[in-house]
Image (cartoon, rainbow, N blue to C red; front, side, top):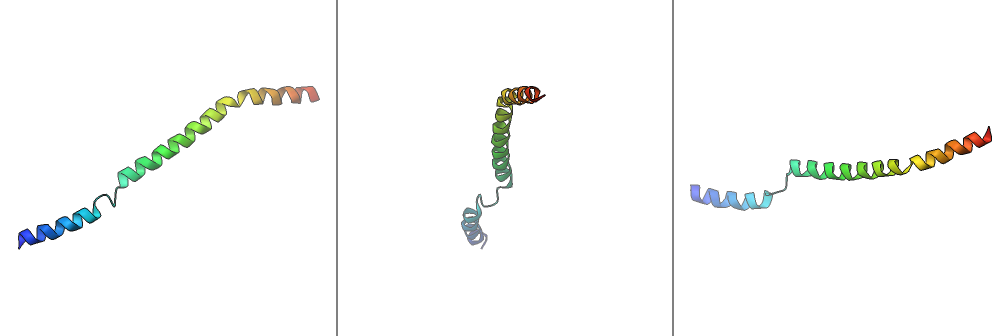
Length: 62
């Protein structure tokens, strides 16, 4: 009887294997967030030249 139960349990175990991977889902979301933040930081690093142009143009108006 125990042997039949283990055989049935194995089929259910195979069916549910990987269906609830909370840590994997968390890490995937964290990687996406990190990629987005790296893109934003790269954009912010590129902006100082634009800010200088804005400051110069506002000084010219005075």
